[in-house]
Length: 206
Image: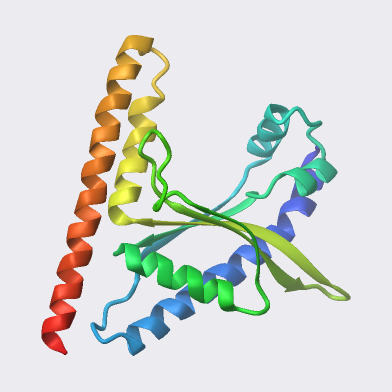
């Protein structure tokens, strides 16, 4: 895949990403205005478009030729957004609203909050298709949207830094994995406690 092919590939994904970010921003303000607690659900949003090298590396890992066609057909996360929410309930509320939008198609959903990965990782992943309107056609483009609380994101960010140091022995990696799993459980407890405080506060104000 040359640079021109890469540019032609990612342009629709950049447009789709902007549309998703705009929708999420609108939802954030709308839910703030309608909320009894007057709290926005979204703390911040991070986004990225995969680099040419990252696309090629992932295709090779999938045992596919790193071509424009294979990137379109076999990669679902060329465009990705990470939505960091304050509370777990905020995640589920946002996901349900997105899923109810008639011009957005949910291709895949993985709930690692209800069922965490064995290493303790928690997040909710959606692969959605969103329409973008070109000069003479409508095109459906995939975007991956990950939803995490602040605690989930804190754990995932540090896990990546701590777990993937190449100079660590297998024995030390096993020890770190055990410690990280315990930290993940503590983060889950923290999320639940924060949710309980929020609901208690709301009940007192009604």
